[in-house]
Length: 105
Image 1 (cartoon, rainbow, N blue to C red):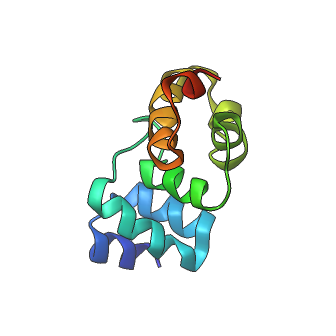
Image 2: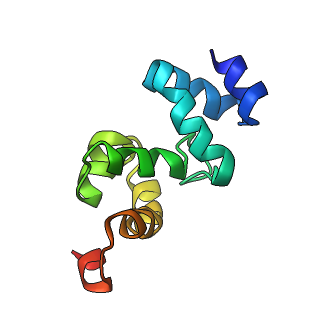
């Protein structure tokens, strides 16, 4: 499956493998979003911004839910989570129409 993600959507091998393992056949939906703007949330991990957008569509309502439960980044590397948090909040703010005040919460 990950080979189809690499060939069909131009994803990096590591990202495609991660998406295939974690999301199964739903990985293609995320790959479509990632091919438009598939930037990694943090360079050392295969998580991409499209996963954050997908998580919002799957009812992730706050940054803690996203960074701890969906991406598990806060458990894998605290420093990476701290660095990635502003970017994750910005992505979520776009999709959830958060104000600057709401992003700080």
